[in-house]
Length: 365
Image (cartoon, rainbow, N blue to C red):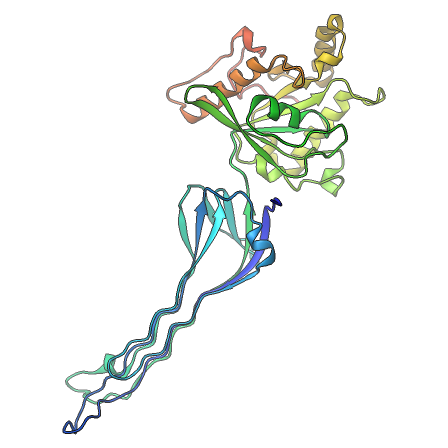
């Protein structure tokens, strides 16, 4: 299924039906009273978060949704029928914005959550409504009220605890396939990943977290190079970012430190809040380096980058160092979920991280 995370649609609720002016006219009843009914309510439009959906593909080709109008009132005390409501089913994590003003209207974060997007118009009053002891033959009626209409922008941001960040071919897809149940496309050319992938990482019984892999960034993404910043929004709800760096690029002229700095720069350009999230450095493909040079190259990389946060040296393909990374990531996520239970969490030496509290280690760049 094609992944679609943005859509713009027009929605219009139904108008209320008009009231009716009518009088009872039957044989032997010369002074029948008013019996004009009220109009029916127009249909409303709701949005509901559906846990079974993961894309907005349904709204890519169907762009307008109109609820039915309420029926007008009739004689013989007959009220008009209400218009049917429309329910827009969207994935959990969808943001609904007013496309014209940019105002954020709703954010559906809970499965089954339902919100009223456009309210249908109320029906008008028939002359039966105006009957009283002093107004025994009313001829008043009111038209139905118009329903609301607006242009909506739907934006999906996936719900994940940990996000993977890095250049194309840094090994993000290989890593998420190695530690989770996700099976993304993996190949030896750039931009293999064209849409976000989610995977569930199971650490133990009832211990798991969700990791998100987004397409790689390149220098100049803020100006539209590569896939630009199109998918970075999917990392905004994560608790932790793992910055993957390819320690053994195919081209010897490529400097991994320069690539890491370019990613950090693009991240800061896109969103300062996203840049401020806890971010760990993951040096991938160390199996491509001679065993006797690995430690020295890792230390040299950290020194040149002036990195002060947690550092992991792994090989996603050979599955080296993944256990420590997964355990440390879960500890950080668990600390965010239950801050009163797990406070001032420190990592062990086995986790291959600096001994500072999770999320407090930050880079100076």
